[in-house]
Length: 53
Image (cartoon, rainbow, N blue to C red; front, side, top):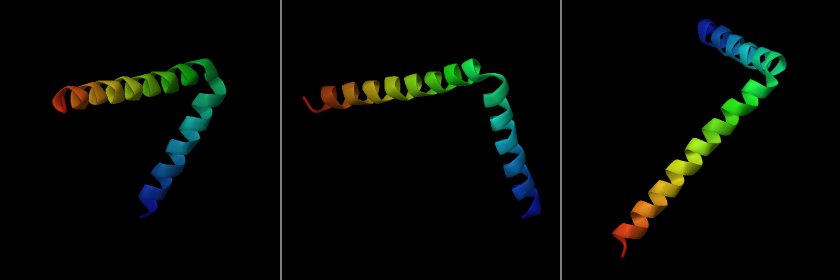
């Protein structure tokens, strides 16, 4: 249990450090994730539209 807590805090500290030292790179990474999710949702919607026709 202690290891999980330490790893969680270390991960949070890394994210905060990364956001503080590389804000534009962090923003680009988040934008990339949201673009990927958006593309996947669009493709899934297209698939179901074609199936239900």
